[in-house]
Image (cartoon, rainbow, N blue to C red; front, side, top):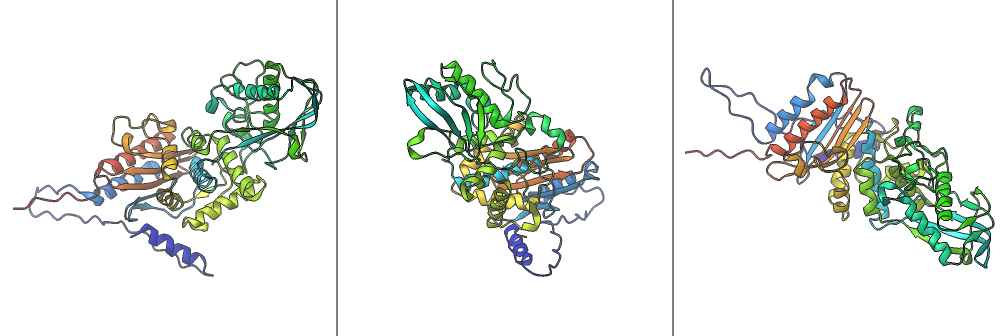
Amino acid sequence: MRFLHALIAIAVLGGCASVTPLPPLPPPEPIVPVELEEEGEIAPPLAGRAALYAALDSITGDTLFRSAILGLLVVDASTGDTLYARNPFTAVMPASNMKLLTGATALVRLGPDYRYRTTFALRGTIADSTLRGNLLVFGRGDPTISQRMRGNPMLVLAAIADSLRARGVARVTGDLVHAGNAFPGPIHGFGWEWDDLTESYGAGVDELLFNEGLAFVPGHPTGGDTLSTRPASDPARAYLDALCAALSGRGVRIDGTTVRDSTASFAAGDLMFELHSPPLREILPAVEQPSQNQIAEVLFRTLALELTGSGRTDSAARIVTEQLRAWGADTMQFIVRDGSGLSRHNLVSPATVVSLLLAMREHPYYDVFYWSLPGVGSDGTVRTWLRGTRASEVVRGKTGTLNMVRAFSGYAESADGRPIVFSFISNHHRTPTAAVTGAIQGMLRALTEIPLSPVASSGQ
């Protein structure tokens, strides 16, 4: 059965008033019991797709998943043939597999060369090395002023101070102003749990963001997260505090305080300079490989900001939804609530993820997307997996982990070089996460060590 044909059928049914339930997916090559001609004769081993089906069926049928909602879809990317399916159309919590949706949509809609801009403007006049008025900072969500992206983020802010001095400003008599409101609404994602908000991975985001939303530690030489793992209560304020420290360190004095003016604007003559981020092609690996929530949330809101003029999360969810529909996904099989997957209100089916992965495989930006994903045995969240096996050479994919949620989806290659796309998502398992991870690793070994084509026999 062809996966792409199945998606088309689902899309047609989805537009009708009444929907006929879809029949269950049959295995691609039913395994027929071998009848032995003589007592004691050993049946030949299964080969090709039948062997892969048997291996995956053994893994998904394990008792560790007896309480779980388990979804798995494996597709031959070169033909669209379904190699294995278990609950492929069931919408479940994807955890950080949501970053596949966010990253792919951002890459396609914004382009790999997209850069964030932070604008510095004045409200006043400059004379005798003094800005008599306010210094305005208009952010658009640059997530790269961080230890992860820049090594020492304070050096980036120090470069801003150097730019001011180069333009004749060594003193500001007024305030340092957080200007504009590019990301209106709450700093946290939809439905994030209270317990997560005190952890570094649950930090909020705003249009001005320092060190992935963590609190600024005055006097720390890097402003990095080695000492600060506490989320900032106000991410934009943490940015301004760090900027004030950098300005002071470069001899630029601010007489006033840090304030917010969401209605502020500036005329062309008030523009001083802009700070540009690295391109999206360099930002995306910092999202996917370590599974970084705050950069993913910024990308999510940036989609809305760039395509609608305001970085609202509800607009971002509509944009991702529209893109998934364009890739053939059925809207009854997913719900988009945030960009990172930290929300337990997201729902995604394995078929939705596979449709995205197949679409990206045909997209001009596929290489950027593919290499942004962590490689098994080498990068990010899967750097310790299956080292020394074939999987460590040919699998790249995205993990996902929440309480009672484990996911892994991506790209692989069979033992005989056939391209494979897969999505594995388990919800509500009661077994330890490590056991589910072991099952995923077993699946990856089967995908990469079993040839899809049967071995030809040499007859006499």
